[in-house]
Image (cartoon, rainbow, N blue to C red):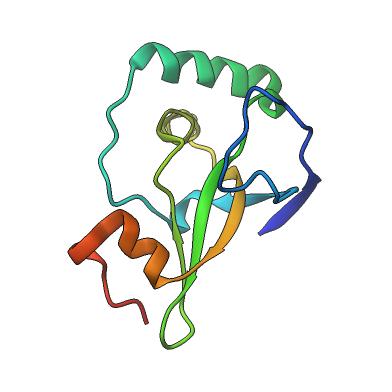
Length: 120
């Protein structure tokens, strides 16, 4: 995954999960796991698509949980950023700007409970 370097600080678009992570990566859309269906507002997706096409650096990165499986597999989970994800997907972008948060199975279980898979 290509690194874009330190993010520009935008006080209105901060995340408590990744606020201390300055590096933004271009993460391949194909590796993202989004286990929870999104409830989208079409006007937000449309607005984001326009902004991405005109000035993508104005759209904050999504947060991704990076989890190592028991046998070394890499898993990239995304729970937030639903409208941004949908906008990049509809624009057929191969990558999405993201902050990668090193995580573990326990963190994932917070989101998925008993539905947490056995990651290898």
